[in-house]
Length: 408
Image (cartoon, rainbow, N blue to C red; front, top):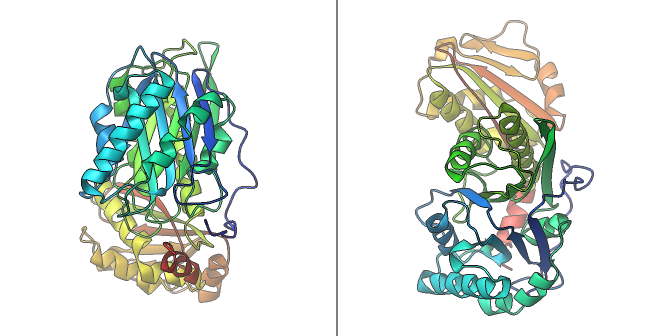
């Protein structure tokens, strides 16, 4: 039975009203993979001609579904495609059993939906190291195919949750050449979040027309500035998968269109932020800006060192403006830094400048900022022009409570 967790205090008021994407339908149902009394499998069917791009975990222990998806990416398929996702069991570290489960599920989806097996993509999320009871998933496939609905994306978002406290969705509708182009995406993620690719599980759909190679480049570029700039607990999942599917149903070619890139960026950033806001036990959404680094890459290294520091994150949870812990994180990052050039701000409060506490600094001002739900920490290294912004959350006892009994 899935344990009921209180909804994150940082959650949005409601699941958004997402645009319907022509050429995509959804269904979700209960398969009893691990949970009882809740939907835990979703199936999305994609129209013929759909292009699929993806980005995946770089973990050396990545799961069988991830490896299978990576092998199947390519051009548009005349026969359409399918994406099946289950929650409760990640089918990771399961050896030949994991490969056999993926083979059985993809073959069964192909039969049920009338698709080539090479166009069936699967993801699994949940407990690591237990064989996936794939026969339970196969048993509900006819039900999933029969229940397909163009408006079923919200149910799909709920079906892929594990320790998430709310379903995550984001969408945009733009005009290009006087015609509408729509994007809608869903995500799951709450813990084991330190992406080194994309994030947890994310599925984005658009009716735009774009060639797969160009879409792949675009997805990878935007990933670096969105999902690869978030962290909850510094742990990279074995199952992280991001798939982007373009049906082309709008008839609008978005190749090289800045408006489409910006809209896709906004959807991906929205979903990335929602994952952080649902961080296990989180009470604070934290934005970290690093400027003045030797390069953008070094700024990223410094920013993630701050964001992943348990000492920084617990200080934030305790509403303690302990800027010494920020200095510590910078020093341990391994990227270039000069102690006597560093400037630090908490919110609008100048804490330290050029390697020393600012003479006008009043801890009460910084402490007041720490009481808010949105915390901003800014660091200027004074070395070069490199900059990066990343997002994280605080580390509370709630994180321990959730993960101590995750399998029980």
